[in-house]
Structures are given as C-alpha cells and as structure tokens.
Image 1: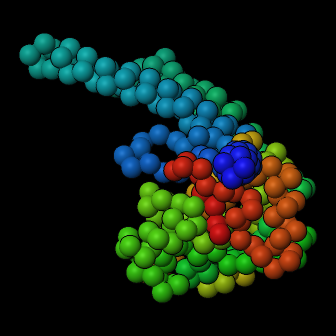
Image 2: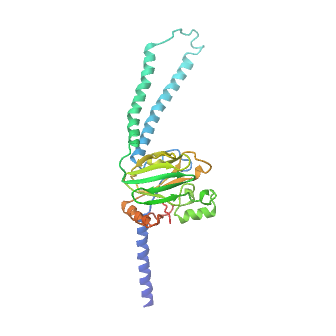
Image 3: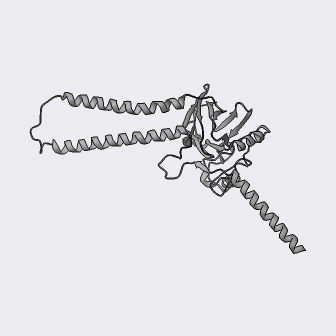
Length: 303
C-alpha cells in the first residue's frame, strides 16, 4: 500500500514536472539581438526596416567594391603603361571631352541609382505611423526611463551591475549572481538591464525619445533604429518586431563618464504574454518572471 502510494506520488510529481517544463518552454525567449565577441556582421534583422537597411548596405558594398577594383586596376595599368621607361615621350594633350563626359555622368548615374533605393528606406524610417503601442524613452545619466503613454506604466531601467545602482561595472561574483537571478549569464554583462522594455510581436511600436540632462541616443541594432535623445525636444522612431525574443541595444551618443553603462533591453513577446505583463505592470509589478522564463543559456528574464 505504501509502495503504491509512493509510486503514485512519483507519477504525479513527474507529470507536474513535465507540465511545468512545457509551460516554461512556452514562455521562454531566445536571445536574438546580441553583439558577439569578434563578430563583424550585422545582428539578425528583426524588423522590415532592419532588413531594408542591411540589404541597402550590401548593395552599396557591391557597388563600391566594383569601383575600388576598377580604379585600382586602372592605376596599376597607368603605372606600368605610362611610366618613363615604357613611355619616354609623354603626350601633351590637355583634355579629352568624351572621357570627361563619361567620368562626370557615370558617378551621377551611380548616385541616382543608390538614391532611388536609399531615399524610400529613409522615408520609411522617418514617417512615423500610428502606434499600436507608444512608449516614451527618456535618457538620463546613466539609465533609461520608460513610460507606456497609453497604459499609465512607468519605470526606470538600469544595467545590472551599473555604478548608478552601487555596482562597480566589473564582473564580480555578486554581479554574476544578479545576472543569474535575472535569468542571464555573464555573457550578457554590460547588456542586460534589471527591467526590460516589453512589446508585443507584430505590432507597430512608436518610441518617443527625449533626454533630461545631456544628449543620449536610443539604439537597437536588430531593429534598425537609432534616435538621439535631446533635452527639451521629443523625437520619434518606430519598429514592428517580427520575431519573439530578447534584443539588446546601447546608448549611442557619448553622454559622460558612465556612457558605456546604460544599455537597452527589449523583450518581444506574444500578444497574450504582453497582455499578462500589462496586467501585472498596472498592478505595480513591472518585473518579467511571468513573461520570459530562462531556458538554459539562450534566454533571459527578470525576477
């Protein structure tokens, strides 16, 4: 009887464990937008704007590579063909009209071609649509403050281990413990914040950016967005994240002694998870343990 009871208890515990594991897996968020040590490429594009910018960068790279190869080849040809040994009697003409027309028109054509693709992307960035979620981001020395304009939610976001919160901006056992407690690893040191911006996937998010003291800059590379935070002015940017996950950014305008220690963490979650987070945040709890539970080393969450 006792053995049967024990076995039943083990079975129930096992089922509970599996159920909990399944729930955690559903809540887990992958770290998608993160700088990598030694990396030289772009972070994975998580928005249409970022995809457009990366495509434009690659297209221009092909063009300028062709120009460099052509000009380098032309220089080498001229060096060997028209040096004093190969060409002891130099020509004395002063101009060549057809050649001058070509080297004037060709750069114009190339620039017009580039502009035909770059200007629409620029306009797409600058023409702010109606936001389904509107967030005000305020840069401070040296942290970010966020306000969900239509939801009545506001909080500050500090780097874990930041000197602004009494940290030493050094990887110490205490800081590593804080990172682990928040669901991160030491690889996310200098990137992870104690509280993250949470937005729903597939929704237009408008960020109103300003500053309180000096010029800061709100930048998330995987979203293809960057906007200076100028005191006394409010500027805007927008994005629509296409993939759930965790994305890191940084203040990208030198703003003082601890400029390097005011990162940005954005968590893109499902609409259901976002709605649940809103409910908790409106109740005064902006922590994210119920939104994003860490799964191994690939995800992160706040407690």
